[in-house]
Amino acid sequence: MSLTVAVWRGAAAGRLVEYQVPTQQNQTVLDVATYIQRHLDPTLSYRFACRVGMCGSCAMSVNGVPRWTCRTHVQRVARAGRIELRPLDHLPVIKDLAVDMTEFFDKWARAKGAFVPPARRPEDFVAVPPADPARQAASAGIECIGCGVCYAACDLVERSPDFLGPAALNRAWTLVKDVRDAGSAARLEAISGTAGCHACHSEQSCVERCPKAIDPTAGIAGLKRATAAAAWRALFQR
View 1 (cartoon, rainbow, N blue to C red):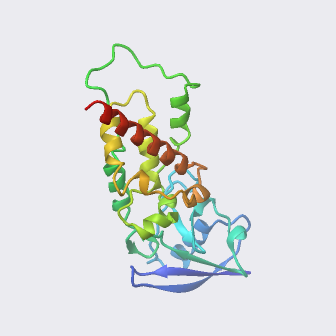
View 2 (spheres, one colour):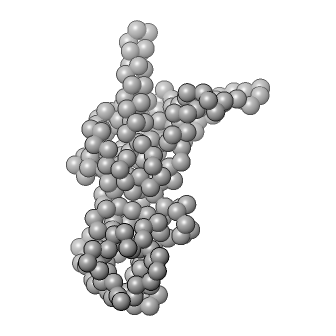
View 3 (spheres, rainbow, N blue to C red):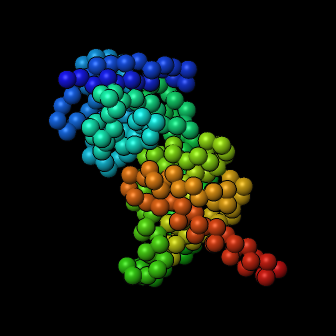
């Protein structure tokens, strides 16, 4: 038996090209893309690295839904013996199934998603008990690996390209709740503008599609509360 696979070829102005791929037991969508590249058309461009759900680089749109293709079995998504592969939405297409992630990571930088150490080194290591509420809030979102699935699923990114996106805001939240970090004031200012956390409408497409079962919407809600509290503190300090 064979599977009909329609694959996006070219850049933004490309087209779908169909291939016939033999079906196999426990076959993943990444296996399908690999078969096409190795046996049918060596010019096909796509990304992958670990193949076991740790790097996130194999993310594509499968039948219109952003997924990790290494963890998506063909039998779960094939419709009448057919699947459709496209590049992730909301990111420029380099070629075929490979997108330019520059904008995605630039938004992490705009959200100040890097840990900021204190100006003076503490005399001893900062102890963060696992049961600490702030630690638990950070831990809920810390497993994000930047695959871009939530960004591709976000309806607001489609409507408002300047929106920082769920991944960048989730990263900001984990740092705001990190008691060792010294950059929260600047970070809250960076994510409080019109393209930041308050733009999110909580439609939760990011929650539904996240392969790591992270809830970026919860973190964004926390950022909304944190920015409001910071604004009140600034008002009364005048």
